[in-house]
Structure formats: structure tokens, C-alpha cells
Image 1 (cartoon, rainbow, N blue to C red):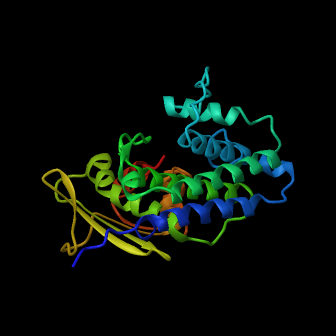
Image 2: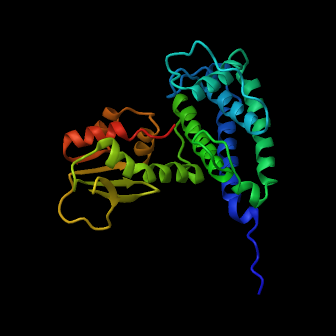
Length: 279
């Protein structure tokens, strides 16, 4: 019997649907707002709500084939690399525009992106190309677009003092990426002694427990580690990803009433400081 090739829809529609849900949620959040709302400061240093929309617009336009703008110079203090300078140029291009105009552009550009994505075949989805992380298959790049867009949706909601309670594919990608980075954080950034064990318990919709032990200089997952952990942290998913994305500081993460820390205070501080790994 001939084995049927999986369709693009069956393989990657979850990703397109996740982007659509995230972008539409951002549009609903800002629809009908006074222009002052677009000036609200967000957790992203130097950026307003308008600036976040401009950043998302600019990246989608580049993906659609438009050239990168000229990097901004001199760079503001909060811009730390060449990609940041390009992003800042996209943002500055739209700072003179009203929020309504920028929101309309965002709606138009993201609708065009969704149409493009739904027209890709499997070969195009899996073809390697440019991404901010280096050469990656296109589906991996679009996972990063979902991650970026979902976090920025929460940035906007936090700026407006209206945190949302939706989750969806965006949160899944964010938390899974952070979990995948934990061996690097514990083994390299924290760099504890050989045999040191971390137990991390996340609470909420995406609840999970992760145990890592340093063996031969590498942090490896352990289903069962005997004895007490050198560091055990219990915290909600929402605090975990906000620290992982640098939206809250290490001290705030550890001091939060919902975070329970047991074990070495020094390791806890180093872990919290090293946890900020998402762009």
C-alpha cells in the first residue's frame, strides 16, 4: 500500500493557527483604544505599545521580501547588537504615526503573512534559511515568530494593566523552549559542582517537574534522583516564562510570594540570573 505524504495543513497548521490566534488577540486588545494607550511603556526597554506593533510589522515585512531598513545609529542604550539596531530602525520609522494607523498596518501585514504561510508546501516549510538564531528550517523560524509574538502580546497586556488568561500554542512554544534550555542554564550558566541536582516544579496549565544533575560536567535529566536536591524551586508557569524572557528581574522572581525556594541561596540566585535566555 502506498504511504501517503502528510499534508502541509496536517503538519504545520497548528503553527499557522497559533500565529493567527496570537495576532488576532493583539488586534482585539488594541481595537478602539485612545492614542494614549499606544504610548504606554512596556516591559521591553525603550519600547511603547506602538513600538511593539512596529517591531512585529517590520519583521513580517522583511519575511515577505522587503529590504531591512538602515540600522539606527547612534544606538540607544537599550540596543545591544546589530539585530537590535535593525529592529530599532523599524520602530523609529513609525513613531510619528498614530496608534490607529500602526494597528491597521499590523492587521494588513499579518493577514498577508498568514496567507503566505497557508500557501507553503512541505518542502518550503522544511527548507533551511536565515533566522535570528542562525540557519534554521522555516518551520523553526515560524515557531520563533510565534514565541516572539505571544510574548509581545503579554507585554502589551501588561503595559495596559490588563493581563490576559489565554494560553494556546504560543505559551506551549515559550515554555517548551525554556525547558529545553534548562540543561544549559544549570550546567553552564550556574556551573554547580559535580553531582549537584536541580528540581524545578512548574504549576499551572503547563505544569511539569524537571530534575537535572551535573554528571561529567553536563546537566542531564534524571527521572529519579536519590536524596534531596541542592536547589528546589516551585513557581507558576507565568513567572517562569517572564523570567526566562527577561520581563522580570532575578530578585523579583525569587522573592515572589508564589515562588518557593529550598536549598542553596547562592545557587538559587545564580539560577535566576542565568534563566533569562529568550530574546
